[in-house]
Image (cartoon, rainbow, N blue to C red):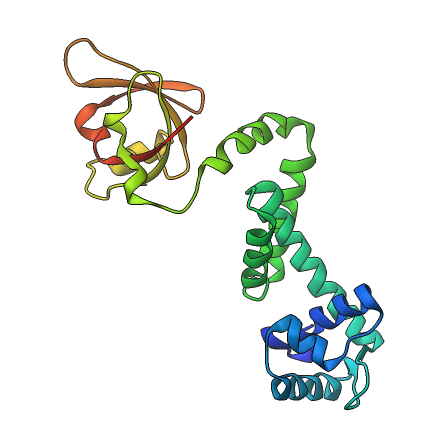
Length: 228
């Protein structure tokens, strides 16, 4: 792909052409414009640039087709997109439209090394038998993590005994913040308040299968979203 020096926009055009040809057997200029939500002059300029690179066959008022080289490049681009979409939808459990949008944004900005490692991670977590417990944890935890909404956040110290929550933010002003991160109290962690000491300000919480004690005044700096 480096040989063709393609911009992210050109990659989008190639991917769209390949998709249209697969869906309907042809890719007309108007269809490409509608799919990418761009104006016709922009499409014409992009198609000329791709034609000059030997990646498509293009004549005005005729369907666009991929050359052998273009089909090969488009295949790589689509594989990268689908692999990222799988990571976002099956591992991070985003909705399909969110996963597709995230894949579109990320696919042009990461190199092959990062891409390969994401694929390796996805395959391992989603397919290895020894990752079954991790998959259960992700299925339970990921859907509970969403965009931060201050109205729905409460300090960990305000959880009641037996209630669970997902850590959304840890205030930078918390003393010893690294120590708490080492204990697993970071954004995205699912925890449960098991109880509190009858006297004093110690709270007992369960994090990743382990129980630990936390001072109530420190817990006030850790913001969570309650879960059911």
